[in-house]
Length: 195
Image 1 (cartoon, rainbow, N blue to C red):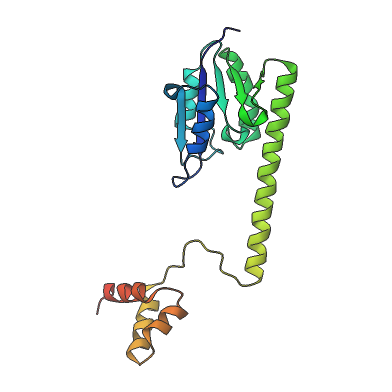
Image 2 (cartoon, rainbow, N blue to C red):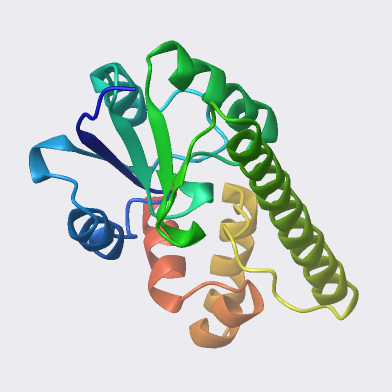
């Protein structure tokens, strides 16, 4: 295999996360800034990710795709297991920094086995995380606790009833609290209603 460039790839799943640490680690490993591709707010569950696709397209014979951790490549074991064949077809290698910084040569039986085991472990980790979240949500729901997320939408009729309660002397703060919304939101919704 010809010795080529190091092509770095970093990814975060949400727009409010940053890739600073990944980028620092990739640059420290020898990736040039010009050869660094970063996806912001892109789930690893998606097979197609714009910058990942560009990084793969940039690979030539002898190049190496470098990621900080295996889960940056994706969450789907099926997609991850197809990656070595795709890289091999380009004559490229793979280096995962959290595996001790060594090259995982997916063209060798040992490298292929390591990659397959690590992909399966990443899938297992994701499944365990999902199981924990599901269990936590079930427990919070059973305890009657707030699950977070988007607040329920109130109909105009409900807002009209809230206005009637306030007009009848109920404190607006109490009515808003009972509806689990802020007083300002309640006033804004009431102001938007036709008289």
